[in-house]
Image (cartoon, rainbow, N blue to C red; front, top):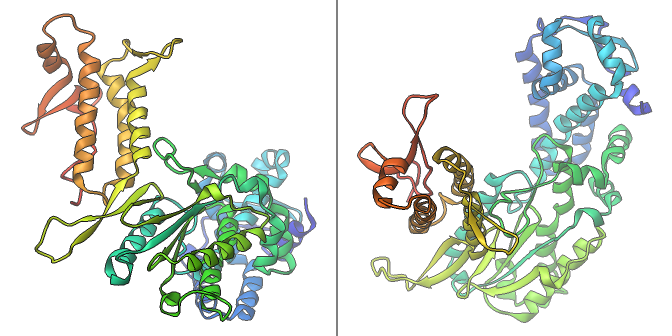
Length: 475
């Protein structure tokens, strides 16, 4: 075990034996939350000296460690189940091993570092997460999940629609492809500017393998582009946010500096949005000097991380021609409704590549390709198999898009899906195809004809999910 691990546990000064269930958890949680609020508030105003002092105290705080232990047990069922077989008491056998009661000592001896690493990992997240949530730039949405993506899309849409100077705007869209294997992790430690035990711990865990093992692609079943995400409870998410921290400020600082060649009227109107490993720069108009300056700023920013921004990952588009960002297509169309006196209207839709990939994913549930690359139906599948394979795909796509795009797009997908299933089903029948389709594949639910099957385990029918659902969709 590493020395700073033992030092950390040694400095906790916990009793040798304690009743885990007898602790006042409300008091423990409130005490830690108050420290986190102080860290957040001081980070917002830039008082880093006081932030570091509180973090050092919290790192050796008994209540913070107990809360970290509780979070680890709640998140790791294998430890929780083992504890239920004995009791929920904790014993610190010696300063080197964080252990449970003597009934489980053999389990811990075989994996001495497992619980210690998980607890210290959680403790570091408790300490550092408030600081970097406070320091996150206004238009930087991190690597968390699809909720952050929706917030980034809403922000981009509001910028382009609520200010007339962006009526004929030009955008720079870019992303980092395959950046994890090329990342210089030593720069993250310099950028975070931690010292002492925290720096030692971060230097030991901040590796490329951590990024690779923790990262995942968001909505890869229909996303044509790669959008990288990290679990919320992983320290890799914290490191990834540190990597992209400062990109928005770098663009703003360079475009406002005296050496910048941007037009004075447009300096304060260049907007930056960063989400995951994708970024969007919005310009009020098409000015080659402005765009060149910003591209050079972004290249130099990533060069310090050991990353090279390829020309193929950058694109400059007009809002009237449309551009793709995070799986959404932004395009300003001529407005046919004259009541609001607007000549054009910005419309969001899924990108054409995402729609094609989504349709292909649904088609692969019903068909496969033979050795001659011809489509062949999966004839052995029943209604149960078809609906249970299609529902997760439809739900994932709908959850991502339904609140932000026109309902007409989702209705078109439903008609296409219905055609897919109908053509697949009638191939099994040689005669009376229409009658057998109605009897075997459809039913009447709440006065509406839907594709469903009789659920034998539950009372009622298992319905095929629709992309457009009036009960959940906000048009």
